[in-house]
Amino acid sequence: MTQWFVRLGFGQKIQLLINVVSMSVLLSAIFVIGLGFYGQFKTNLEDRVLQKSNLLADAAAVGVVFDQPESVNMLLSSLSVDGGVESAVVFKKHGLGDYQYFAHYQKSSLEPVDGYQYERGPVKLWDDGFFTLRLPILVDNEEVGRIIIKEDDNYLSAFIDTTLTYMLPVVLASMILVWLVSRSVQNRLAAPLNQLTQAVHEVAYKQDYSKSVEIISNDEFGELGNAFNQMLAKLGEHDRFRVEKETEIIRLNAELEDKVYERTKELRSSLDDLKLTQQQLVEQEKMASLGELVAGVAHEINTPIGVGITAVSHMAESISRIQTAFETGKLTKKEFGDMLSAINESADIIGSNLRRAADLVKAFKAVAVDQSSAELRQIELEGYIKDILTSLRPKLKRTKHEIDIQIPESIELYCDPGAISQIITNLIMNSLNHAFLADQVGHISIAANIKGGTLHLTYSDDGQGIDEDILQRLFDPFVTTKRGQGGSGLGTHIIYNLVTQALGGRIQCVSELGQGSRFEITLPMSKLTYHGQTH
Image 1 (tube, rainbow, N blue to C red):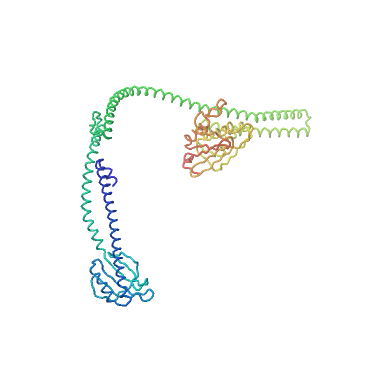
Image 2 (cartoon, one colour):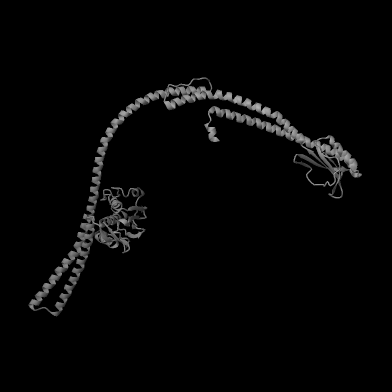
Protein backbone atom coordinates (compact mmCIF):
# COMPACT_ATOMS: atom_id res chain seq x y z
CA MET A 1 0.00 0.00 0.00
CA THR A 2 2.81 2.39 0.85
CA GLN A 3 4.63 1.61 -2.43
CA TRP A 4 1.42 2.24 -4.36
CA PHE A 5 1.07 5.67 -2.72
CA VAL A 6 4.74 6.48 -3.41
CA ARG A 7 4.29 5.78 -7.13
CA LEU A 8 1.44 8.32 -7.40
CA GLY A 9 2.14 11.74 -8.86
CA PHE A 10 2.16 14.85 -6.67
CA GLY A 11 -1.21 16.03 -7.99
CA GLN A 12 -2.78 12.61 -7.44
CA LYS A 13 -1.43 12.54 -3.89
CA ILE A 14 -2.91 16.00 -3.21
CA GLN A 15 -6.29 14.93 -4.59
CA LEU A 16 -6.25 11.66 -2.67
CA LEU A 17 -5.32 13.35 0.61
CA ILE A 18 -8.03 16.01 0.20
CA ASN A 19 -10.66 13.33 -0.52
CA VAL A 20 -9.59 11.13 2.37
CA VAL A 21 -9.37 13.95 4.92
CA SER A 22 -12.64 15.57 3.83
CA MET A 23 -14.61 12.31 3.80
CA SER A 24 -13.08 11.26 7.12
CA VAL A 25 -14.17 14.53 8.73
CA LEU A 26 -17.65 14.34 7.14
CA LEU A 27 -18.27 10.71 8.13
CA SER A 28 -16.93 11.33 11.62
CA ALA A 29 -19.31 14.28 12.06
CA ILE A 30 -22.27 12.26 10.75
CA PHE A 31 -21.37 9.35 13.00
CA VAL A 32 -21.08 11.56 16.09
CA ILE A 33 -24.33 13.39 15.35
CA GLY A 34 -26.18 10.16 14.59
CA LEU A 35 -24.81 8.54 17.73
CA GLY A 36 -25.99 11.53 19.76
CA PHE A 37 -29.50 11.44 18.26
CA TYR A 38 -29.65 7.68 18.74
CA GLY A 39 -28.78 7.99 22.40
CA GLN A 40 -31.32 10.79 22.86
CA PHE A 41 -34.12 8.82 21.20
CA LYS A 42 -33.21 5.76 23.24
CA THR A 43 -33.39 7.79 26.46
CA ASN A 44 -36.76 9.28 25.39
CA LEU A 45 -38.10 5.75 24.78
CA GLU A 46 -36.99 4.62 28.23
CA ASP A 47 -38.61 7.70 29.85
CA ARG A 48 -41.87 7.12 27.96
CA VAL A 49 -42.03 3.48 29.01
CA LEU A 50 -41.20 4.47 32.60
CA GLN A 51 -44.06 7.00 32.71
CA LYS A 52 -46.45 4.48 31.19
CA SER A 53 -45.38 1.82 33.69
CA ASN A 54 -45.78 4.14 36.67
CA LEU A 55 -49.34 5.02 35.60
CA LEU A 56 -50.25 1.35 35.09
CA ALA A 57 -48.68 0.37 38.43
CA ASP A 58 -50.71 3.00 40.29
CA ALA A 59 -53.93 2.00 38.48
CA ALA A 60 -53.41 -1.74 38.98
CA ALA A 61 -52.56 -1.44 42.70
CA VAL A 62 -56.25 -1.58 43.80
CA GLY A 63 -57.02 -4.65 41.68
CA VAL A 64 -53.98 -6.44 43.01
CA VAL A 65 -54.81 -5.64 46.65
CA PHE A 66 -58.47 -6.73 46.33
CA ASP A 67 -57.49 -9.73 44.15
CA GLN A 68 -59.44 -8.59 41.03
CA PRO A 69 -57.40 -9.90 38.03
CA GLU A 70 -60.27 -9.12 35.63
CA SER A 71 -60.06 -5.41 36.32
CA VAL A 72 -56.29 -5.48 35.95
CA ASN A 73 -56.59 -7.37 32.63
CA MET A 74 -59.00 -4.75 31.39
CA LEU A 75 -56.57 -2.05 32.45
CA LEU A 76 -53.67 -3.76 30.64
CA SER A 77 -55.78 -4.33 27.51
CA SER A 78 -55.85 -0.56 27.07
CA LEU A 79 -52.22 -0.92 25.96
CA SER A 80 -53.43 -2.29 22.64
CA VAL A 81 -53.77 1.28 21.38
CA ASP A 82 -49.98 1.65 21.86
CA GLY A 83 -48.40 -0.26 19.00
CA GLY A 84 -44.98 -0.24 20.65
CA VAL A 85 -45.93 -2.38 23.70
CA GLU A 86 -45.16 -6.05 23.06
CA SER A 87 -46.40 -7.40 26.42
CA ALA A 88 -47.23 -6.42 30.02
CA VAL A 89 -47.43 -8.88 32.94
CA VAL A 90 -48.50 -8.24 36.54
CA PHE A 91 -47.28 -10.49 39.36
CA LYS A 92 -48.74 -10.46 42.89
CA LYS A 93 -46.41 -10.72 45.85
CA HIS A 94 -46.95 -13.62 48.29
CA GLY A 95 -44.52 -13.67 51.13
CA LEU A 96 -40.93 -12.56 51.05
CA GLY A 97 -39.55 -12.59 47.50
CA ASP A 98 -42.35 -14.84 46.10
CA TYR A 99 -44.21 -13.48 43.06
CA GLN A 100 -47.09 -15.27 41.30
CA TYR A 101 -48.74 -14.51 37.98
CA PHE A 102 -51.79 -12.20 38.30
CA ALA A 103 -52.69 -10.60 34.92
CA HIS A 104 -51.13 -9.89 31.54
CA TYR A 105 -51.36 -8.22 28.14
CA GLN A 106 -49.73 -9.66 25.01
CA LYS A 107 -49.76 -7.84 21.69
CA SER A 108 -50.20 -11.01 19.62
CA SER A 109 -53.12 -12.35 21.72
CA LEU A 110 -55.49 -10.83 24.31
CA GLU A 111 -56.47 -14.22 25.78
CA PRO A 112 -55.11 -15.03 29.25
CA VAL A 113 -52.09 -17.20 29.19
CA ASP A 114 -51.36 -19.47 32.12
CA GLY A 115 -47.92 -20.47 33.21
CA TYR A 116 -46.19 -17.08 33.40
CA GLN A 117 -43.18 -17.45 35.71
CA TYR A 118 -41.55 -14.53 37.43
CA GLU A 119 -37.92 -14.17 36.41
CA ARG A 120 -35.56 -11.91 38.28
CA GLY A 121 -33.48 -9.44 36.30
CA PRO A 122 -32.32 -5.82 36.10
CA VAL A 123 -34.84 -3.01 36.25
CA LYS A 124 -33.94 -1.90 32.70
CA LEU A 125 -32.82 -4.32 29.98
CA TRP A 126 -32.23 -3.95 26.21
CA ASP A 127 -32.14 -7.37 24.60
CA ASP A 128 -32.74 -8.67 21.07
CA GLY A 129 -34.59 -5.54 19.85
CA PHE A 130 -36.78 -5.14 22.96
CA PHE A 131 -36.70 -2.90 26.04
CA THR A 132 -37.88 -4.54 29.26
CA LEU A 133 -38.77 -2.52 32.40
CA ARG A 134 -39.52 -4.05 35.85
CA LEU A 135 -41.34 -1.81 38.44
CA PRO A 136 -42.82 -2.55 41.84
CA ILE A 137 -46.56 -1.95 42.53
CA LEU A 138 -46.77 0.04 45.78
CA VAL A 139 -49.63 0.76 48.18
CA ASP A 140 -48.72 3.12 50.99
CA ASN A 141 -45.03 2.54 50.10
CA GLU A 142 -45.49 -1.22 50.56
CA GLU A 143 -44.84 -3.51 47.60
CA VAL A 144 -47.86 -5.67 46.71
CA GLY A 145 -46.70 -6.84 43.30
CA ARG A 146 -44.65 -6.13 40.22
CA ILE A 147 -45.36 -5.12 36.64
CA ILE A 148 -43.06 -6.05 33.73
CA ILE A 149 -43.53 -4.16 30.44
CA LYS A 150 -41.72 -5.21 27.25
CA GLU A 151 -41.64 -2.75 24.36
CA ASP A 152 -40.03 -3.20 20.94
CA ASP A 153 -37.49 -0.77 19.39
CA ASN A 154 -39.36 -0.21 16.12
CA TYR A 155 -39.31 3.46 16.97
CA LEU A 156 -35.50 3.46 16.98
CA SER A 157 -35.32 1.32 13.84
CA ALA A 158 -37.60 3.75 12.05
CA PHE A 159 -35.38 6.61 13.22
CA ILE A 160 -32.26 4.86 11.85
CA ASP A 161 -33.94 4.11 8.51
CA THR A 162 -35.11 7.70 8.20
CA THR A 163 -31.67 9.02 9.09
CA LEU A 164 -29.94 6.80 6.50
CA THR A 165 -32.53 7.79 3.89
CA TYR A 166 -31.65 11.46 4.28
CA MET A 167 -27.96 11.07 5.08
CA LEU A 168 -26.86 8.85 2.16
CA PRO A 169 -27.76 11.43 -0.53
CA VAL A 170 -26.03 14.12 1.55
CA VAL A 171 -22.89 11.99 1.85
CA LEU A 172 -22.93 11.16 -1.87
CA ALA A 173 -23.37 14.80 -2.84
CA SER A 174 -20.59 15.79 -0.44
CA MET A 175 -18.25 13.20 -1.97
CA ILE A 176 -18.90 14.53 -5.46
CA LEU A 177 -18.34 18.10 -4.29
CA VAL A 178 -15.10 17.17 -2.50
CA TRP A 179 -13.85 15.31 -5.59
CA LEU A 180 -14.53 18.31 -7.82
CA VAL A 181 -12.79 20.66 -5.38
CA SER A 182 -9.78 18.33 -5.06
CA ARG A 183 -9.60 18.03 -8.84
CA SER A 184 -9.52 21.79 -9.19
CA VAL A 185 -6.86 22.12 -6.48
CA GLN A 186 -4.81 19.40 -8.13
CA ASN A 187 -4.83 21.20 -11.48
CA ARG A 188 -3.85 24.50 -9.92
CA LEU A 189 -1.03 23.06 -7.79
CA ALA A 190 0.30 20.30 -10.04
CA ALA A 191 0.47 22.25 -13.31
CA PRO A 192 3.47 24.45 -12.41
CA LEU A 193 5.09 21.51 -10.64
CA ASN A 194 4.73 19.31 -13.73
CA GLN A 195 6.30 22.02 -15.87
CA LEU A 196 9.19 22.32 -13.41
CA THR A 197 9.60 18.53 -13.35
CA GLN A 198 9.83 18.35 -17.14
CA ALA A 199 12.45 21.11 -17.16
CA VAL A 200 14.49 19.27 -14.51
CA HIS A 201 14.24 16.06 -16.56
CA GLU A 202 15.57 17.83 -19.66
CA VAL A 203 18.50 19.22 -17.67
CA ALA A 204 19.29 16.00 -15.79
CA TYR A 205 19.14 13.52 -18.66
CA LYS A 206 19.84 15.65 -21.75
CA GLN A 207 22.07 18.38 -20.26
CA ASP A 208 19.93 20.94 -22.03
CA TYR A 209 20.63 24.09 -20.01
CA SER A 210 18.70 26.29 -22.44
CA LYS A 211 15.37 25.00 -21.14
CA SER A 212 13.64 27.54 -18.88
CA VAL A 213 10.47 27.46 -16.78
CA GLU A 214 7.53 29.74 -17.59
CA ILE A 215 6.42 31.70 -14.50
CA ILE A 216 2.60 31.64 -14.21
CA SER A 217 2.14 32.50 -10.54
CA ASN A 218 3.61 34.66 -7.79
CA ASP A 219 3.43 32.02 -5.06
CA GLU A 220 6.13 29.62 -3.85
CA PHE A 221 6.05 27.77 -7.19
CA GLY A 222 6.77 31.04 -8.95
CA GLU A 223 9.73 31.71 -6.66
CA LEU A 224 10.91 28.14 -7.25
CA GLY A 225 10.68 28.67 -11.01
CA ASN A 226 12.71 31.89 -10.81
CA ALA A 227 15.34 30.16 -8.70
CA PHE A 228 15.44 27.25 -11.16
CA ASN A 229 15.92 29.58 -14.15
CA GLN A 230 18.81 31.31 -12.37
CA MET A 231 20.29 27.94 -11.52
CA LEU A 232 20.09 26.91 -15.19
CA ALA A 233 21.98 30.03 -16.19
CA LYS A 234 24.70 29.26 -13.64
CA LEU A 235 24.84 25.62 -14.75
CA GLY A 236 25.29 26.71 -18.35
CA GLU A 237 28.25 28.86 -17.37
CA HIS A 238 29.73 26.05 -15.28
CA ASP A 239 29.24 23.58 -18.11
CA ARG A 240 31.20 25.76 -20.51
CA PHE A 241 33.89 26.22 -17.87
CA ARG A 242 33.91 22.44 -17.28
CA VAL A 243 34.47 21.68 -20.96
CA GLU A 244 37.40 24.06 -21.04
CA LYS A 245 38.94 22.58 -17.91
CA GLU A 246 38.38 18.99 -19.07
CA THR A 247 40.30 19.76 -22.24
CA GLU A 248 43.10 21.25 -20.19
CA ILE A 249 43.05 18.28 -17.77
CA ILE A 250 43.35 15.80 -20.66
CA ARG A 251 46.41 17.64 -21.88
CA LEU A 252 47.92 17.78 -18.39
CA ASN A 253 47.17 14.09 -17.82
CA ALA A 254 49.05 13.18 -20.98
CA GLU A 255 52.05 15.17 -19.75
CA LEU A 256 51.68 13.70 -16.25
CA GLU A 257 51.64 10.13 -17.57
CA ASP A 258 54.97 10.75 -19.31
CA LYS A 259 56.43 12.19 -16.10
CA VAL A 260 55.04 9.32 -14.00
CA TYR A 261 56.56 6.80 -16.39
CA GLU A 262 59.98 8.44 -16.11
CA ARG A 263 59.72 8.76 -12.31
CA THR A 264 58.58 5.13 -12.04
CA LYS A 265 61.64 3.96 -13.94
CA GLU A 266 63.86 5.99 -11.63
CA LEU A 267 61.98 4.74 -8.55
CA ARG A 268 62.27 1.10 -9.62
CA SER A 269 66.00 1.55 -10.16
CA SER A 270 66.33 3.18 -6.72
CA LEU A 271 64.22 0.43 -5.14
CA ASP A 272 66.38 -2.28 -6.69
CA ASP A 273 69.49 -0.51 -5.40
CA LEU A 274 67.89 -0.21 -1.97
CA LYS A 275 66.98 -3.92 -1.87
CA LEU A 276 70.50 -4.84 -2.96
CA THR A 277 71.96 -2.56 -0.30
CA GLN A 278 69.66 -4.01 2.34
CA GLN A 279 70.58 -7.57 1.32
CA GLN A 280 74.26 -6.66 1.49
CA LEU A 281 73.76 -5.15 4.94
CA VAL A 282 71.99 -8.29 6.12
CA GLU A 283 74.79 -10.48 4.78
CA GLN A 284 77.36 -8.16 6.36
CA GLU A 285 75.49 -8.44 9.66
CA LYS A 286 75.55 -12.22 9.41
CA MET A 287 79.24 -12.23 8.50
CA ALA A 288 80.00 -9.75 11.28
CA SER A 289 78.18 -12.03 13.72
CA LEU A 290 80.11 -15.00 12.39
CA GLY A 291 83.40 -13.04 12.58
CA GLU A 292 82.63 -12.07 16.16
CA LEU A 293 81.89 -15.72 16.86
CA VAL A 294 85.22 -16.75 15.32
CA ALA A 295 87.09 -14.19 17.39
CA GLY A 296 85.38 -15.29 20.59
CA VAL A 297 85.94 -18.99 19.93
CA ALA A 298 89.59 -18.34 18.99
CA HIS A 299 90.10 -16.48 22.25
CA GLU A 300 88.31 -19.23 24.16
CA ILE A 301 90.45 -21.94 22.55
CA ASN A 302 93.65 -20.08 23.42
CA THR A 303 93.11 -20.75 27.13
CA PRO A 304 92.99 -24.58 27.11
CA ILE A 305 95.69 -24.75 24.43
CA GLY A 306 97.93 -22.40 26.46
CA VAL A 307 97.37 -24.50 29.58
CA GLY A 308 98.13 -27.63 27.55
CA ILE A 309 101.37 -26.12 26.20
CA THR A 310 102.44 -25.20 29.74
CA ALA A 311 101.63 -28.69 30.96
CA VAL A 312 103.58 -30.20 28.04
CA SER A 313 106.60 -28.01 28.86
CA HIS A 314 106.41 -29.09 32.51
CA MET A 315 106.11 -32.72 31.42
CA ALA A 316 109.12 -32.39 29.09
CA GLU A 317 111.14 -30.81 31.86
CA SER A 318 110.21 -33.63 34.24
CA ILE A 319 111.14 -36.27 31.66
CA SER A 320 114.48 -34.51 31.01
CA ARG A 321 115.29 -34.54 34.74
CA ILE A 322 114.44 -38.27 34.95
CA GLN A 323 116.61 -39.03 31.96
CA THR A 324 119.60 -37.05 33.38
CA ALA A 325 119.30 -38.72 36.80
CA PHE A 326 119.00 -42.13 35.15
CA GLU A 327 122.04 -41.62 32.94
CA THR A 328 124.21 -40.41 35.85
CA GLY A 329 122.99 -43.20 38.07
CA LYS A 330 121.62 -40.80 40.67
CA LEU A 331 117.95 -41.65 40.14
CA THR A 332 116.39 -42.72 43.39
CA LYS A 333 113.13 -44.53 43.82
CA LYS A 334 111.49 -41.56 45.56
CA GLU A 335 112.57 -39.12 42.83
CA PHE A 336 111.31 -41.51 40.17
CA GLY A 337 107.89 -41.75 41.88
CA ASP A 338 107.59 -37.96 42.29
CA MET A 339 108.46 -37.40 38.63
CA LEU A 340 105.92 -40.01 37.50
CA SER A 341 103.25 -38.27 39.58
CA ALA A 342 104.14 -34.91 37.98
CA ILE A 343 104.06 -36.49 34.51
CA ASN A 344 100.62 -38.06 35.18
CA GLU A 345 99.25 -34.78 36.52
CA SER A 346 100.53 -32.92 33.44
CA ALA A 347 99.01 -35.61 31.21
CA ASP A 348 95.61 -35.18 32.91
CA ILE A 349 95.80 -31.42 32.53
CA ILE A 350 96.75 -31.77 28.85
CA GLY A 351 93.93 -34.26 28.22
CA SER A 352 91.18 -32.23 29.88
CA ASN A 353 92.19 -28.98 28.14
CA LEU A 354 92.53 -30.69 24.75
CA ARG A 355 89.05 -32.19 25.18
CA ARG A 356 87.73 -28.77 26.12
CA ALA A 357 89.32 -27.25 23.04
CA ALA A 358 88.02 -30.11 20.90
CA ASP A 359 84.45 -29.52 22.17
CA LEU A 360 84.74 -25.84 21.35
CA VAL A 361 86.11 -26.58 17.89
CA LYS A 362 83.39 -29.17 17.27
CA ALA A 363 80.57 -26.84 18.34
CA PHE A 364 82.07 -23.91 16.44
CA LYS A 365 82.56 -26.04 13.36
CA ALA A 366 78.95 -27.22 13.36
CA VAL A 367 77.50 -23.74 13.95
CA ALA A 368 79.94 -21.86 11.69
CA VAL A 369 79.54 -24.28 8.79
CA ASP A 370 75.74 -24.21 9.17
CA GLN A 371 75.67 -20.41 9.14
CA SER A 372 77.85 -20.18 6.05
CA SER A 373 76.06 -22.90 4.06
CA ALA A 374 72.45 -23.85 3.46
CA GLU A 375 72.62 -27.65 3.32
CA LEU A 376 69.65 -29.58 4.70
CA ARG A 377 70.46 -32.25 7.29
CA GLN A 378 68.97 -34.07 10.24
CA ILE A 379 69.55 -32.48 13.68
CA GLU A 380 68.48 -33.25 17.21
CA LEU A 381 67.07 -29.92 18.36
CA GLU A 382 68.10 -29.99 22.05
CA GLY A 383 71.70 -31.03 21.35
CA TYR A 384 72.05 -28.55 18.51
CA ILE A 385 70.91 -25.65 20.67
CA LYS A 386 73.41 -26.74 23.32
CA ASP A 387 76.14 -26.59 20.64
CA ILE A 388 74.99 -23.06 19.82
CA LEU A 389 75.26 -22.09 23.50
CA THR A 390 78.74 -23.65 23.60
CA SER A 391 79.83 -21.51 20.64
CA LEU A 392 78.46 -18.48 22.47
CA ARG A 393 80.35 -19.28 25.65
CA PRO A 394 82.84 -16.40 25.16
CA LYS A 395 79.88 -14.01 25.32
CA LEU A 396 77.92 -15.79 28.02
CA LYS A 397 80.81 -16.34 30.48
CA ARG A 398 81.11 -12.57 30.94
CA THR A 399 77.63 -12.52 32.47
CA LYS A 400 75.83 -14.32 35.28
CA HIS A 401 72.69 -15.05 33.27
CA GLU A 402 71.02 -18.46 33.53
CA ILE A 403 69.74 -20.25 30.43
CA ASP A 404 67.11 -22.96 30.85
CA ILE A 405 66.45 -25.40 27.98
CA GLN A 406 63.12 -27.26 28.02
CA ILE A 407 63.16 -29.32 24.83
CA PRO A 408 62.33 -33.05 24.59
CA GLU A 409 65.17 -35.19 23.25
CA SER A 410 62.78 -36.81 20.78
CA ILE A 411 62.43 -33.68 18.60
CA GLU A 412 64.50 -34.16 15.43
CA LEU A 413 64.31 -31.84 12.45
CA TYR A 414 65.38 -32.12 8.82
CA CYS A 415 66.13 -28.54 7.85
CA ASP A 416 68.79 -25.90 7.26
CA PRO A 417 70.51 -25.84 10.69
CA GLY A 418 72.07 -22.48 9.88
CA ALA A 419 68.62 -20.87 10.07
CA ILE A 420 68.01 -22.36 13.53
CA SER A 421 71.52 -21.30 14.64
CA GLN A 422 71.08 -17.73 13.36
CA ILE A 423 67.66 -17.40 15.01
CA ILE A 424 68.80 -18.62 18.44
CA THR A 425 72.07 -16.65 18.25
CA ASN A 426 70.30 -13.40 17.35
CA LEU A 427 67.70 -13.90 20.09
CA ILE A 428 70.37 -14.48 22.74
CA MET A 429 72.50 -11.56 21.55
CA ASN A 430 69.38 -9.38 21.49
CA SER A 431 68.74 -10.25 25.16
CA LEU A 432 72.39 -9.67 26.13
CA ASN A 433 72.56 -6.30 24.36
CA HIS A 434 69.09 -4.89 25.10
CA ALA A 435 67.19 -6.82 27.77
CA PHE A 436 69.50 -6.83 30.79
CA LEU A 437 71.19 -4.00 32.64
CA ALA A 438 74.85 -4.13 33.69
CA ASP A 439 75.52 -6.57 36.56
CA GLN A 440 71.94 -7.86 36.31
CA VAL A 441 71.39 -11.58 36.73
CA GLY A 442 68.86 -12.54 34.10
CA HIS A 443 67.00 -15.71 33.19
CA ILE A 444 66.53 -16.96 29.64
CA SER A 445 64.22 -19.85 28.74
CA ILE A 446 64.17 -21.82 25.49
CA ALA A 447 61.29 -24.30 25.16
CA ALA A 448 59.89 -26.37 22.30
CA ASN A 449 57.13 -28.92 21.72
CA ILE A 450 55.13 -30.35 18.83
CA LYS A 451 51.34 -29.97 18.72
CA GLY A 452 49.09 -30.81 15.80
CA GLY A 453 51.85 -31.03 13.21
CA THR A 454 53.38 -27.70 14.29
CA LEU A 455 56.63 -27.02 16.13
CA HIS A 456 56.11 -24.38 18.84
CA LEU A 457 59.40 -22.73 19.83
CA THR A 458 59.27 -20.21 22.69
CA TYR A 459 62.13 -17.92 23.69
CA SER A 460 61.69 -15.64 26.72
CA ASP A 461 63.71 -13.48 29.08
CA ASP A 462 62.90 -11.51 32.23
CA GLY A 463 64.66 -8.32 31.12
CA GLN A 464 63.46 -4.73 30.75
CA GLY A 465 60.84 -5.47 28.11
CA ILE A 466 60.16 -3.50 24.92
CA ASP A 467 58.46 -0.13 24.55
CA GLU A 468 55.11 -0.24 22.72
CA ASP A 469 56.33 2.07 19.96
CA ILE A 470 59.38 -0.14 19.26
CA LEU A 471 57.31 -3.35 19.64
CA GLN A 472 55.04 -2.38 16.75
CA ARG A 473 58.08 -1.99 14.43
CA LEU A 474 60.27 -4.66 16.02
CA PHE A 475 60.75 -6.77 12.87
CA ASP A 476 61.25 -3.83 10.50
CA PRO A 477 64.81 -3.32 9.24
CA PHE A 478 67.07 -0.77 10.96
CA VAL A 479 64.87 -0.46 14.07
CA THR A 480 67.08 -0.31 17.18
CA THR A 481 67.35 1.39 20.56
CA LYS A 482 71.17 1.36 20.40
CA ARG A 483 71.66 3.62 17.40
CA GLY A 484 75.26 4.87 17.49
CA GLN A 485 76.18 2.25 20.13
CA GLY A 486 76.88 -0.64 17.81
CA GLY A 487 73.25 -1.62 17.10
CA SER A 488 72.42 -2.10 13.41
CA GLY A 489 68.69 -2.79 13.78
CA LEU A 490 68.89 -5.90 11.57
CA GLY A 491 68.95 -8.64 14.23
CA THR A 492 65.18 -9.15 14.61
CA HIS A 493 64.66 -8.43 10.89
CA ILE A 494 66.97 -11.35 10.06
CA ILE A 495 65.06 -13.53 12.54
CA TYR A 496 61.75 -12.59 10.88
CA ASN A 497 63.03 -13.39 7.37
CA LEU A 498 64.50 -16.73 8.46
CA VAL A 499 61.28 -17.80 10.25
CA THR A 500 58.82 -16.69 7.57
CA GLN A 501 60.80 -17.32 4.37
CA ALA A 502 63.44 -19.98 5.07
CA LEU A 503 61.28 -22.08 7.44
CA GLY A 504 57.76 -21.05 6.32
CA GLY A 505 56.57 -20.21 9.82
CA ARG A 506 55.30 -17.30 11.89
CA ILE A 507 56.76 -15.25 14.73
CA GLN A 508 55.30 -12.77 17.17
CA CYS A 509 56.66 -10.93 20.19
CA VAL A 510 54.76 -10.25 23.42
CA SER A 511 56.34 -7.73 25.79
CA GLU A 512 55.66 -5.05 28.37
CA LEU A 513 58.07 -2.63 29.97
CA GLY A 514 59.52 -4.21 33.11
CA GLN A 515 57.89 -7.60 32.35
CA GLY A 516 60.44 -9.13 29.98
CA SER A 517 59.87 -10.35 26.42
CA ARG A 518 58.55 -13.54 24.85
CA PHE A 519 59.08 -14.61 21.24
CA GLU A 520 56.62 -17.26 20.02
CA ILE A 521 57.70 -19.08 16.85
CA THR A 522 55.50 -21.64 15.07
CA LEU A 523 56.97 -23.79 12.28
CA PRO A 524 55.02 -26.32 10.16
CA MET A 525 56.46 -29.80 10.57
CA SER A 526 55.69 -30.46 6.91
CA LYS A 527 58.76 -28.32 6.11
CA LEU A 528 60.91 -29.91 8.84
CA THR A 529 60.60 -33.61 7.96
CA TYR A 530 62.41 -35.90 5.55
CA HIS A 531 60.72 -38.54 3.31
CA GLY A 532 57.41 -38.27 5.13
CA GLN A 533 59.01 -38.62 8.56
CA THR A 534 56.58 -37.54 11.33
CA HIS A 535 57.03 -36.66 14.96
